Length: 347
Image (cartoon, rainbow, N blue to C red):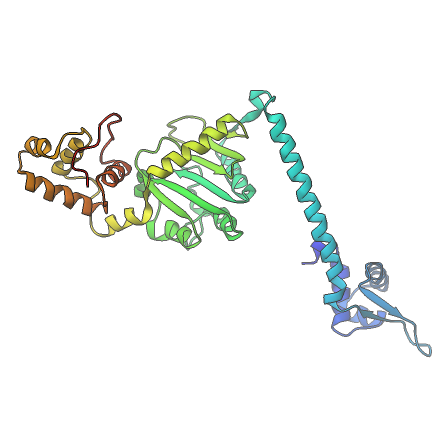
């Protein structure tokens, strides 16, 4: 407990014994079971730190030692240590600024590093999270290097490092792939526990890659696009590539479906995919046809078309056709047509 103030265990033990009422070397030996030499050495160190005062013996008695009041004794030590930490932090910030300035002329090979082996990848994931100061951004999808049950909290299913990182105020934004939700995560346990700690989560089908980004300083992505086993990864340091990865995450985040809406659809009993009629309707919506033409293509009246469209919007919790398209795409129900014009009569 006292290591932050550079007190060794013997000094801590002697000071606490003084606080409890022992005042002579003999009393301190009895209270601590230390040798006379050990007691005197600890007292001498505490005197030098101005934590203990010595009083001369009276009428042939032993010298007496009294502790300085803790709130006074340690305040100056704490202030000195805090100032030392502030100076160290300022120096680190200066070093980081110099690092960024020099990164422009660095060898490209220094901007990325390859991590191989499952254990090494897990260590890098933990290190990246512990290094974050503001925010972790991630894309969570299979395969998993850290799916060992022994590394999960038995109550929440969360990785302990994430819980510790969030506990010190680091925010998390995570995009979960629907395949990972279906095969690995427990919606009411690990994802629910993370949400209670403040994680912001969204869902997307067919995410292009796993990814983990700490602040805007470092990122981790798989070495291969579609590995069967996550046994190697690329660490990306500050560079143009890191900036692209950060922007790429933000684009996917804007398109992903909030997890609350995804869960509400599943808990309401909605099936995992669209019915054939809904799939055809969604496909027609991406073409840019008018409502009347889409109704004829479906072989139904305009009124029936409108009823089916609004029923599908209600099912996915969409207030507009644009939201309907985005949420259907996030769930993997449809692949948006890049150049299709908006349908007429949009809600």
